[in-house]
Length: 195
Length: 195
Image (cartoon, rainbow over all chains, first blue to last red; front, side):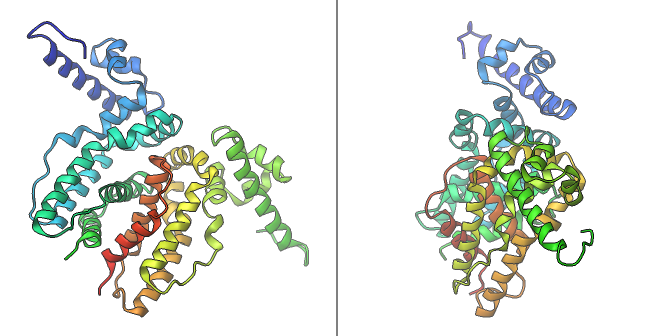
């Protein structure tokens, strides 16, 4: 970010960042992914288009952040067991994919990512990082409890949990049953436990 | 299908069915999903457009069948263990999603399915049925060996395996490592075994 005079820089940057992602989320639901434009987002957020392009390379990157990473700053509780902790991770994934913005964004977002190898390459290195870090914390606690061994396949578990939720909600489009998170977490926890 | 005079009906229908799905698969790779038209498929297959519309409601349904169900008639071997059988199921999903036609078709197909609730509703009831039947056979054998109990969560396992493969190949777009099928199958097998 460009440096700003003392006392005026960071809060304004954070406010406009939040205004931009909020505007993007609203417009995805109102107009759909294809029709949504950076110009409309800028107008809604009360910023110039250049302000948006300084932070995001374009629509796919902005939409992904607006829709799929809003929940990442929430700390997930320590439930005391691997199965319990994985259940809260899956439940938060379900909530994320259940938002109307997610349903509106997914097909167009996938198409744009598939068409752009550079952007696609950032999915694991950047976009999935917060979820991966939450899983690493979960596995550290599980290791301390003796539930898991030293080598937990974090990427495999991440792909599997995210993939299962995405497939169920984003592709088949079914409403998740009340215990989907627990059932999926129980199966994966049992699949990786050592005791 | 419309009845035909004895000796001329069924073989011709099967040949034109195969010619149509083959043409669709070729054209997806050559022109991409969006640009591919029913007219072009009909011309390539040497049939009239009405022949296509008698069997498929439109492009999404035809493309899905042409790309994702070609492998379904293959019997998967009995490897002797649940983990081995699940590995072959996952490996066949990986091969299916790795085809160039799959990469070309996925984003546009998802968009068209998401926009059509009736079509989307058929995903589980029709399109996933062959994979589900293969899994049911695998679980029947596992039950006879005593590896699993009476209540195996077939839909949960199906969503999880298909979702994990789809997420890894279709979204992140990574080449699968040489043992992805085995690692994923081992985790899921352990997650559902009772012994």
